[in-house]
Length: 245
Image 1 (cartoon, rainbow, N blue to C red):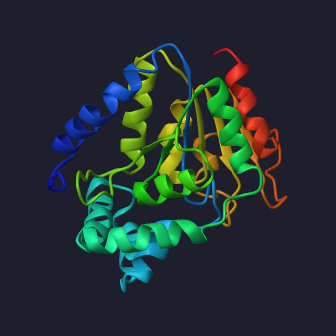
Image 2 (tube, one colour; image 1 turned 135 degrees about the vertical axis):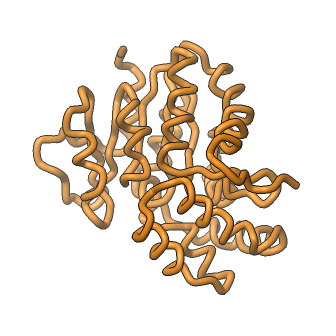
């Protein structure tokens, strides 16, 4: 079992070691990098996990409010979950995955996307939950990238999603990013095509980062779309893999 990296340099090295081969295997292909919580689902699965394990998600929220989306805050977030232990993960992951609802059209999107591109769910939450959700929907060939893993953990937040995106760009991939919050801002800002999924907060912390993006789109699961951003039905996001960059 690995320990959670103590600093951003060691964390970056672990991400590159684990994700670099995935990116290089996708050289010159279209790649979808898709956030999980609040993007594919209206739920925050790591918050559900922490509550179910007897923890208090407000402690993590307060840390982010105090420090912002920095390495130390995301490390605190990861450590808070990982310290619960492997037995808690083994018990709760399948239970939560079985209960999580995904947005209408999200499974159809992933199914269509993987037929024409490589697809990865990139989660700042718990990757094992998203692995289980995908398996339930017959999407076992969609990859999952994330660090809250009691066996081989790493910190995975805003800037780390950016690092992963750059690894795919360095491999000459055409990247389509899909996300909902400021945690996804670097991923979407670097992507050739950026898709915002309108969340319960109307993406107030994300949209300002993307106003100058040359290929910005949105999915509005509940019909409350942003003005001046083209709207796609969720399944139609897969069609962006046909567009050249």
